[in-house]
Structure formats: structure tokens, C-alpha cells
Image (tube, rainbow, N blue to C red; front, side):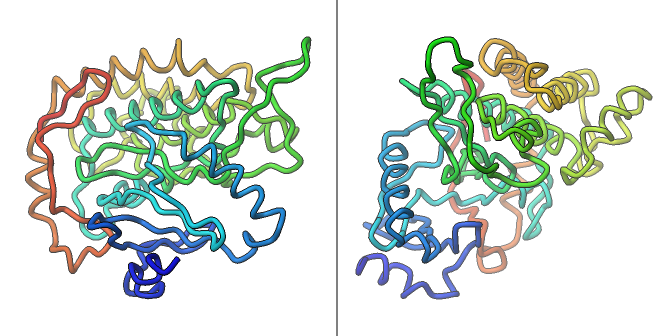
Length: 326
């Protein structure tokens, strides 16, 4: 804890880079590396809270994937978590062009959609039980210095235990629904039954936000209506001038399938959603434009953008065989 105190200048407001449901997040340097330190709420120190925290910590320390924010360490007795630092902030902020960053091009949005789903599939394929995130949203999708998307904030994640023979082994009953309004699976909210397709619902909402740049409220109805009327082009994010309409329509339709109200109507992530996303990401890679990255490097200085660091760009980023040259 002494190291964390010194690294954060005793949790100085000047190093604070965010505030989540679990507490503030600070930018710091530990062992000569930039990190993000999350200080959990004080109620984590209760006996039950600490036990739950430590139990989840054991799960989180075993997770390592290119599309998951890496947990580097923890100070459980004080409720502190240390993560890798994600220099380009959240997908939510980048879609809103916070701090003067340029709009994400459609090519990058298609790639990000594939990266989010890839990370989520990794969680769902954990053994012996799948891990359900339960709070997937743009604010919890972070972008590293290569603009690779990584899932964060798995504090609400739950292992779905094996159930007795003859029962539905893909669902698990929780005493209370957790997550963020507009992204919570409607069936989970109503019945308390959570499963991997609860995350698929949130994934669909995120995809719709990627193509429209709009908030989640009423988004499924609006996009569905636009598709029915044949005017989807008028509903796409106007900050992006060159949407490929056929491919974007496919992503919109996939997103609406993911966000069906009934769990049984949503497609499976591995066999159905991922192949389509990989096709779209490959198409985006073939149309990749370097202009965005030139714009990004011309953005405001680091002092003007405290939450977005543009000081390190790798030559390429990849996802399942798709390489984007920056």
C-alpha cells in the first residue's frame, strides 16, 4: 500500500483519470510502467465484501487475453486494483470525440466490434464454468495506444456454476440484477436468470452505438424502424462520411438480432456472431485509411487531453488475422 500511496501521490485529484461505480481511478507509475489504479469503495472492507473481492480476484488473476484489460496486481486489504494503463481511454469517450479527438473511422469501428466480441467469447469459454461479464458497455471498453479494444471492469462478472442434471445449465439465478440501464438483458432483469446471452444483448446495443454514435436509449427501435423504411444511411453517425452501406446494414441487422428481447432469439456468439464480425473486420482492413491516424497525431497536446495519451503508436494492430497498418 505504501507503493500505491506514493505512486498516486496519496490519491491526488491531479492524477485522477476517471470515476466508476466502484470508485475513482488514478494514473500512476509503478516499477517504471504506467498503470491505472482503481480504489474500490470503503464498503469492500467488510468481512463479506472482502471475501467476495478475494474470491473474484483469484478468477481475474488467471485471465489473460489480448482483448481483456490485464490486471497487474492488487492490494486486497485496502481494496485497490492495479491495471495496465489504456492510453486512449474508453470507447464511450472516443465515440463522443471527447478532448478533441477525431471521429473513429468506420474501418476502426468494425475492427473494434470484432475485438470486443473476441474478448467476450474468451470469457464465455472459460472452464470449467463460463464467466459472464454482466456490465458490458462502451464505458467499459478501453482502447490502448494502438487503439485495440479491451474489455474492462469485470467487477460484476460471475462464474456460472454447473447445475444439476436435467436443468438448464446455461442459466444461473442471481438474487438481484446487476449492470447498467439500457444494457441489461431484459429477461435477466425480469427473472434474475443470467447467462452468456445476457452479455450478447449488451453487445448488440454497443454495435448499434458504434454505427450510429447515439446513446442507448430507444436505439434498437430507432434502428429497426430505419431499416424497415430503408433510410438507415440517415441514421448512421454523421461524423463518419463514407459508411459502406451494405456492410453497415449487415452489422446493424446482426446487432438487432443480438438485442432481441427474448434470450432464445439471440444468436450464439461463437458459431454465428463471430464469423460475421470477422468477415466485416476483414472487409474493413481491405479499405483501411491512414488519414485517421494522421489526424489523431495532430490532436491536442497531452496537457490539453489528460485522459488520452497519443505518445506511442505501434506499426500494426491485429485481430484474428486482420492487420491494420497505422
